[in-house]
Each structure stands twice: as C-alpha cells, then as structure tokens.
Length: 209
Image (cartoon, rainbow, N blue to C red; front, side):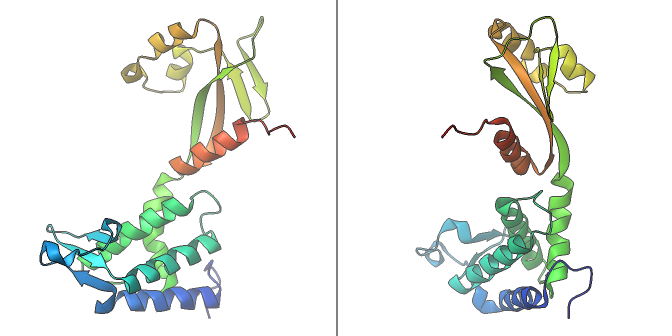
C-alpha cells in the first residue's frame, strides 16, 4: 500500500520502485574508460558525475528512466505547473547526483521528493508582457480583458513592478513602436516553460473554422 498522501497508486509506486531497483544495478550503466567505450551510444545518455567522471546509460538503464518519467508525468504531481521536459530534466539531474554519490532512491515517494526539490523552486506566478498589434487605445492608458490587460508601452510601468529593464534598452524598443504596438500583460503560474506555453495558449485567439 502507498501512503494516503502519495500521488501514486499502488501499481504506479511498484513500477517506479522496480525501475529504481534496476537503475541501482550495474547493467543499467556503461563505464567510460576510453573514447572507444562511447561506440555508437547517443551523447544524450551521458551522465555527468562529480570529479569529472562520466558514465553512459545502457539500453536497459534508459528504459528505466523513461518508465520513471512517464509514470511521474501520468500522475501529474505538480498539477500541470510543470511539463514533461521539466520532469525529465529534474529526473536526469537527480540521477546524476545519486549516481555520483553511489546512492539510489528506493521508492516512488523518495524519488518524487528529489525531483520536487528541483522543480518546486521554479514554480512561480510570473507576469508576462508581449507586444500586441491591431488595437488602438483612445483616451485611456490601459484596458482590462479578462485575465489580461492591454496597456501603452512604458518603462515606468516596468519600474512600478520592480522589473530591471536597463539591460534590454526597452526605451529604444518603445521608440521603435511608433504607436503601432501595445503591450499585452498577463499573470501565469508554473515553471518558465509552462508559463510561456500557457500564456501563448491564452493569448492566441482560436483559429476560425
């Protein structure tokens, strides 16, 4: 049985536990002693370890990682605030750390704790601003549209939100707009990847049939 607070079903927990046990075995890895050891193994299977060490995942090892990630994504422990790539990246870095230390997680919950420590700090509410054309504001400086706001480009607005914009030379960019563009602003929660994807989805109008 799994803990009542665990997002995994008993079956899912067993799948991940079995995959972790496989990853703890030598058959999941191929040590590198010379360039010949790389053979035709894709570079994407390299695990960068501490002290300038490196190992390669075998076919068997790669299958276990894919199984762990796929099962975790199926559970969606981050409630859609992290995507497949986020979970894959966190899992890979976690594996590198564990292998470097000669360790391996022993349960789905332990594995989730490891990757959560990498993903949770990335999940934030972010304000996104993109250029917007096709609308003109007459007599007003901004217009609220549901969860979005249309506003006139202004460095003062960025400064009010505490955004450091000097490095991007925003003032020069605004001058180039020549009143043709507004800013579309919205707030989305998630990892950087999820925020970008969700904002694009919310901001893009549906295609006409």
